[in-house]
Length: 245
Image (cartoon, rainbow, N blue to C red):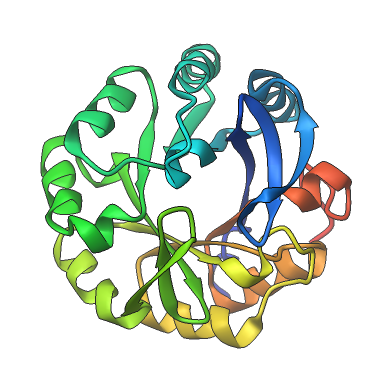
């Protein structure tokens, strides 16, 4: 008798917001953008209309200190949440007040990045207040060195330096992004994905480089639960919703 098949990796559409528009950046460089929708709300509606149950929003301006897009993010969370579509938000969430404002505005879960390095106690505090289902950590890295401040700065810390304390804080879901491949359509780095899978044994979502159905198959083979995907589904190298595995 064989066991049940493992669930298919979840492909999460990403809406990156810069200067009020839905864009994708090449390698995280804010000056190398491609605009896909003039309205981030239209982008979010597009993916929800295709069946997305979860949409990943990133406030690139807040992440890089160039401003913020809080109003449109709250609008997206309210509209999509009203139709049963969950929204998670990252970018510039570096203190409790910002996190609380987003969660109270209907954001299903917040994604903490730079603050993991600068304010490490924040993750545990938010998990205690809101539960592990509403707090996600994103470790964005070049190789295995964690980058901060919208990927503009190296932290001097490696993924392995942070994962034990995150597990101890009660974190359940980790997003790992390969900054060097983000927006490049180069495909996933299998060895890097395998290494991060060993370092994080709870729910793992990855980003950076997903290009085709082969990358989704790789996730399934490595036991990775999902991926945040942008350019591949905007440009059609990976169909959405994903079929054919």
